[in-house]
Length: 144
Image (cartoon, rainbow, N blue to C red; front, side, top):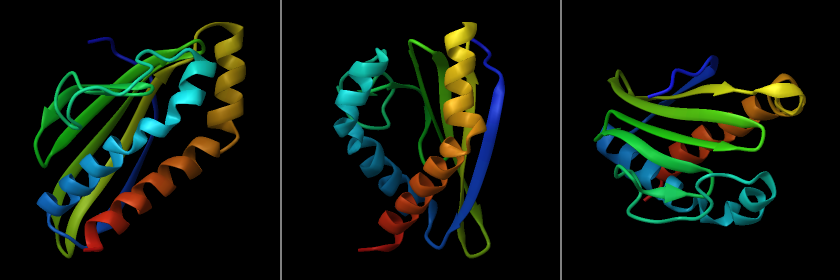
């Protein structure tokens, strides 16, 4: 496994047990198939969905599942023209529910990578996108 530089980490308490959060995470990852046009524009690897969400070797546009510990951790990795990246979700039982974490590690090689990092990371767009992603998973976990 390639070690990538740390970018950021976000956490959110979900008022639901880890099993419910895991199901919500699987549903969210499984629904990421609509990223196809962006995946094509960025030249992502992988570019399309395959397999069962949250199982090793499953893919969605831009990500492959590379590590799984059911109800505890899932690591998604990918690459495109401007970056190599990993998004790791962690789940831990906590008072009041489950602490859901999302850690991003990424490398942005070359001048185009640096420009992309400025556009996506430094601008705050990534932070907002991950916060929304965590809120969406929380909503799925607590809504029947």
